[in-house]
Image (cartoon, rainbow, N blue to C red):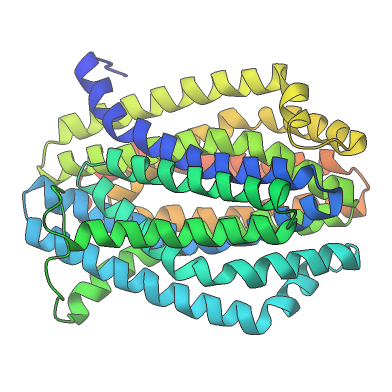
Length: 446
């Protein structure tokens, strides 16, 4: 039974709203970049969309590990163990930075092979533009890792407003640089790429300056270089890696769906990305509410207040479903003006409208399991979430979509059915675990 109250909603919104807005700002930057490149030509639009999809999959590594740190910090901060929380932040920053460097090196060496392997169905010019964008921007990966690590750590300590403000500043810089580079200097896709690179590097550097300088009044600082502890490292990485693998597998699955659309047409790839611009707004909201569940429910679990943990989880579930379904309805009604913002290609717009309206019907299913995953993760069920988060997309969504979309020639209808089948499986699995309530008493290694 849902027990909504002003105090409960305020507690949830203090984390959910800033986190959702922060995520939305990242999406807004991507969307505005799409608008800018969409006005250049369709090849540039598809090329940048391909790279953004690849980066989204890689960012899942940082986000997954960072959410693992958020779970630990929420519990540590809940019992006022500030030293342990700061140690956790130090370790996750180091882990993400090292992974970012490794990914940059891999993409520098094998980027061409990866792009050609994934999107060999597309024109040579599109591949060439995608490689140019990738080469310019891949240096930003370590800074992106640091950005996600520090933001997640601060959210775990209950501060979601500062990451939001910093994201706003960085994204304004990104948009301004992209607009100036393309429309004033005429640099085309290179201008968009350099704007992305500069803004992402700034995001990581600014956050590092804040947490390293003790004069700034923050919940957590990196006050010292912590001695390496295999137990501490293992505790953070073992829990965070579970979420990392889950998110990486899911986002790689989205990349796989993009590859499947490339078998239809270039317009289908563009339409899929345009429709995702709308759906990603819904996912940004669920991201904020998932973080709210991790922080709020995790804090109550750390205090052993099981009653409030249960009430908070139920409220977050109800609020997520209500908000996302309402936004889905808005997108269904205003699909045409929304899609038309991003492209002037009539065929792409037509396919994008159809794609968005079909995908809207999957929103009630996605918001069900996305509302629950934060509670399950902070309740020690991250492995359960990971198993279904990996298995269902790859064993249900991809095979179904490929069979219906490519082999049976159902086009985008097969794509949407593939999504829906996956969401039904995951929603059912997570609901079963949620209502069994074992997450209330599970132990999390800190």
